[in-house]
Length: 118
Image (cartoon, rainbow, N blue to C red; front, side, top):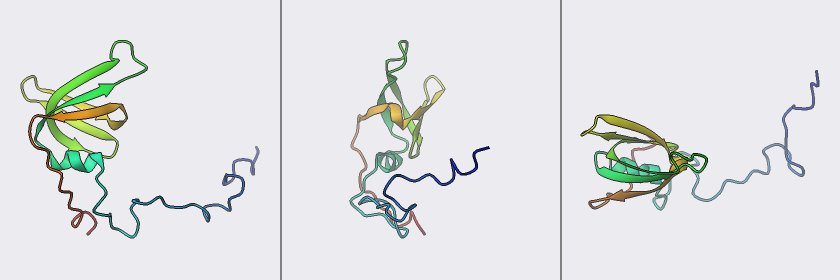
C-alpha cells in the first residue's frame, strides 16, 4: 500500500538512533550505579513485609482511591503483587497506579546490585 510511509520513522533533525542520549543512571554496560534506588528494588528488598499500598484510579468512579493491605510477594518494574493471608486475596497492582507504600516496620534500603548482572 504505502511502502515507505511507515518505514523507520525518525524525529526531524535526527539520523535514526545516532543522536539518542542515555540519561544518567540508566543501565549501560551491565551495571547499575549504587545511588540508583528504584522503588521496585526497594520493594523487592522488603519482600514478605506487611504493607499498605495507596493507589489511585483516576478514570474509575467506583475505585477512585483504594488502599490494599497485604504482604509483598513480588515486585517488578511495572507491577507489585500483594497477598492477604487473612482473606486469601491476591492483588496484581500496576505501579502506574501506586501513590505510595506505607510500612509499619523499618524499611530495608541497602540496595546491593553486585549479583544483579552476573
